[in-house]
Image (cartoon, rainbow, N blue to C red; front, side, top):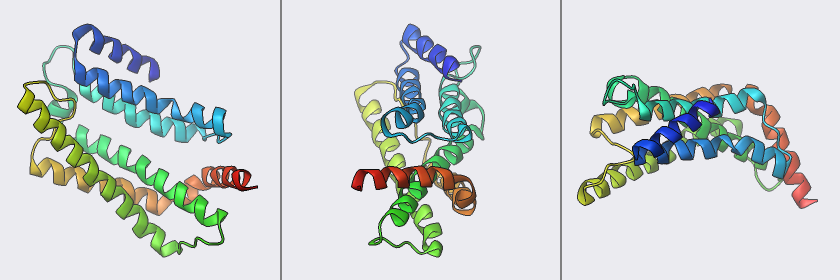
Length: 199
């Protein structure tokens, strides 16, 4: 997937498509987080978690470039593409929030997060991030329109924004329900890293 993303990035550079360059470039940077965490902090992500992260940014990059025989990208031509990428991306945001708070909870006696509240926290954390993202999309679109430039993020209206937040919520609920089972190992690794920092 990373090799294909590099190819998409090159196509963006060759065609001068700023949206493809920026979106794919950011995606490629995100794919470097797992090796960075392992090399610099000793936090080795499970291969399934690495695949999860890579799939989310890969589908976003593919969605931005679209079909070679069409002027429309997948976000504009495939009705469910935006929903899929929002649900995947929000699940990653939820996993980061869950892992961080759970590791802090286990690391420090001064912090206690009741299990029932963790579900609510994940939902609020993801929705806050989702709203911030929608404001960013809206602002970038306004700036692009006012300067006559192509936008790197597109907002398609109020209905699109509301649906984005609905699918953000779905991604958050999935992690809130199954996060304990699948994120325990990474929580333990982050806790060990925190313990090592304070030892």
